[in-house]
Image 1 (cartoon, one colour):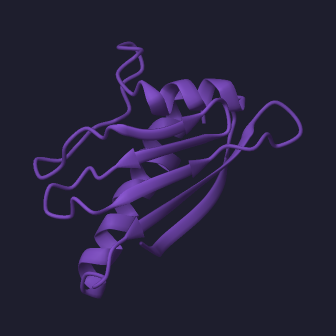
Image 2 (cartoon, rainbow, N blue to C red; image 1 turned 45 degrees about the horizontal axis):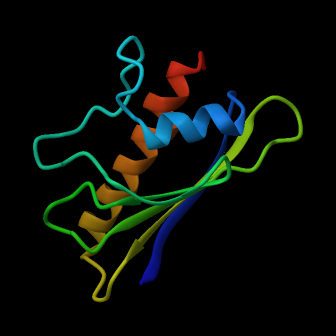
Image 3 (tube, rainbow, N blue to C red; image 1 turned 90 degrees about the horizontal axis):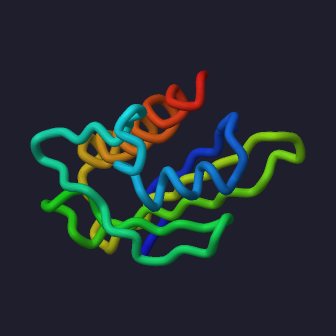
Length: 119
């Protein structure tokens, strides 16, 4: 597997709360955030070490080799310095598709999930 993209951004919730949201994305129906497109599927949790690591299976049936790793260190205060990293097998997709995959993970995590925590 090759790293195909990564981004780090602070989430206002503590690591154990972010961990729970990632391992059970539909766990709180009052705060839906995993809003998938027609060509996407819910991920499976492949690995997890509470509260600091979650690895998802691919959300793209067309790229079943994809994995998304979430590192969830505390920010030293009340939040989480979440880093997502997208891994893909060779060959990597063309730049436009790769950009789309990165953008979707970023939108789901650093927009949708983040907004459920009030930011």
